[in-house]
Structure formats: C-alpha cells, structure tokens
Length: 418
Image 1 (cartoon, helix red, strand yellow):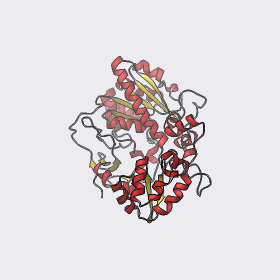
Image 2 (cartoon, rainbow, N blue to C red; image 1 turned 45 degrees about the vertical axis):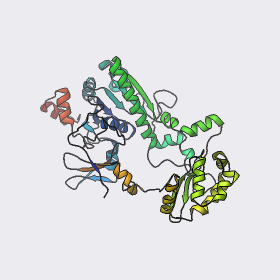
Image 3 (cartoon, rainbow, N blue to C red; image 1 turned 90 degrees about the vertical axis):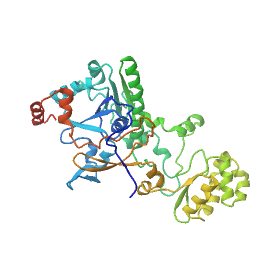
Image 4 (cartoon, rainbow, N blue to C red; image 1 turned 135 degrees about the horizontal axis):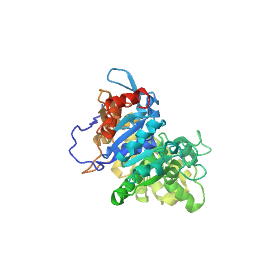
C-alpha cells in the first residue's frame, strides 16, 4: 500500500485563515469545493444541511464508507469536498429555522450558497437582507448561469455547462474517426473550476472587508467559469474567427503532442518546441525526420500533422512504453505513461508528495481522502477534521454560537427544525 499522510493532531504552524468563519449553505460540488479549500487554509466552516437528508452527495453511491461498526455510511462522493467542516442540520424553510440561520449570520465572515437565483429571498436570506445583519459579510452565490442574463432562472449542472460552454466541442475523437462524438471530461471540471474561482474571489473580498468594513456580493456562474478556462482554444477562435474542432488526444497548437500506441500499450509524447523535436529524432534514430522540411518547425509540423503522425505511428510502436520513457527522459524529451487512478496513488512522486491523506471521524469511521495540493512553507493547508457525519455538530454549534440550552435544542429537534 502507498504511504499516506495522517492528519496532524497538534498543528505546529499557523493557519492562513485562522479566525475566519464561513457559513456554508452549498451542496454537491462547486460550493463545497470552495469551502473545503477555505477550511484547509484554516477557516472554520459550518455546513448547514437538511435534517435527515443532508448534502445530496451523501447518497451518491456506491461506493459508500464503512463505519467503525461495519455498517454503511456516507457515499465516497461526499468525502471529496467536505473535509474540515462542522455539520449543523437546520430546516431554514420554516420561519423558526430561518430565524436561527439569520441569528448565525453575524457570527460569520463569509456565506456561500448555490440555490437557484432568487431562491433564498423568500426566507430573508438573500444578500440584501443579510447584509443588513452583517455589513462586512462576504456573500458568494454560485449558480449555473449567474444572477443576470436570460438564463439566470435556469438550473445549471456541470454536464450541461461542459456542453453549453464549448468544452465538449473540443473534447473527443475527431469527426470521421472511430468513436467520434463530443465528450465530457471524466470529472465535473466546470464545478471544480467554479469552486476554485469562487475561492479566489472570496479571499479578495475578505481582504477588502477587513480593510474597509465593507462586504459584498460575489456572483459566480458555472458558464462564465467554463468559458474563461477555454483558454488557448478561446483565444484561437477570437484571433482566427474559426471555431476549434475535436482533435482526440492531439493539441491544436503543438505537434507531436498526443497519445501514441507503443509495443505494449500507450504513451504520451509531448514535444513542446523545435529543440525537443530534434532531440526526439536523435534519440529515436530518425535523422531523416529531423531533416524533413515539412517538420522542421512547430508551425510546419502542425500544418503537416497528418503526415507527421503517419510517420511516427510505426516508430512509436517499435518500443514498449517503459522503453520509450527510459530513452526519451535521458534525451530531455517530455513523455509519460497513462496511469489508471490506482496507479496514480502508487506513483512514487504522488506518494512522495503525500497526496493521499487518511482521516478518521470521532466515531472511528476511517476516511481516505486526497490531500490539498497547495504546499506553503509557513501556513500550509491542514486536514484538521474528517468530513462530518450528518448533524454531528448541531448541538455544539447552537450552544456555542447562539447560547441555546439543551431543552431548547431538544424542542427544535422534536419539531424537525434541526
């Protein structure tokens, strides 16, 4: 088994966001990804969940966690985005529940929500309403299409946004080749991009609030973020006027930069400049390719891509993946294997970087997680607590923040409000 990182029990270094409190009304992935990142950096995250149900992803399995008693617990999906949070169950659709939530707002610096545009106004929990309770509050709304524009009322899902935002139009095999069709990415990247952009926006707004005492409303849309991360593909269109097309595993601007079959599998060859091309040809024993005028510059290799790939296919099939990697790494030519996810977590570099982190709930339920990738010398991210069981912190949080008594809490529980 690969070596894993255990969460520290006594942090030796300070946390960058120590003292920042975040009220997390978000579910599924984009919002929870943002709040988990803030939590890893030291913020205290209070996750508000529906009594008896919780975040939708608690039931998005299999696979499911096995608790310390051998029973079925939350879905693995939930654990990917809910580390370093406390869970408070609260039905804020009731008048009493919404008043409790409003009472919590002055105790927090940030609120993150991903309800449909305008969906919280009827509970008095929209930005304009809660800003009166806490003018310094940073209020981040995450939706599919934003707070404005003709699509604002629509529900937005990652899959739909990958499609509408152009990503699927450049992902998948090229037209006319076997298996050609638009494809989504294998993880919900529109959600993840939005969660990361939301984190950046929240940190910027927090700095402003701390300097001026003025909070603000952050309007994050999955479609906006997906459009932004089209990056060079968007720039290619804006400059040329031509919409990029699917190229399978090839790169629109560089060649050869794609997957090739090897003698025993596949390999990624990533020739990024003309010097690396010459180094590849020398290592592969192909002086004729190095001298071929069709291939001497990257622009020419891209223009003559079909001939280039046809020339390389039999050459790349002549060695095993490991054989090519040994040869090309010595020559300074970027290349690599295509690892399955189990192989990723066994990779010596991933192990050395401690990217698997094992956590344990107070009830003894073990939870393996992927560590935060940020490395910082003074205020590194830390996994202080495992993804919580549903409502695990309801009693403690209502007591400490609002001063409710045990009897009051039991009364709320009897009514189904918590």
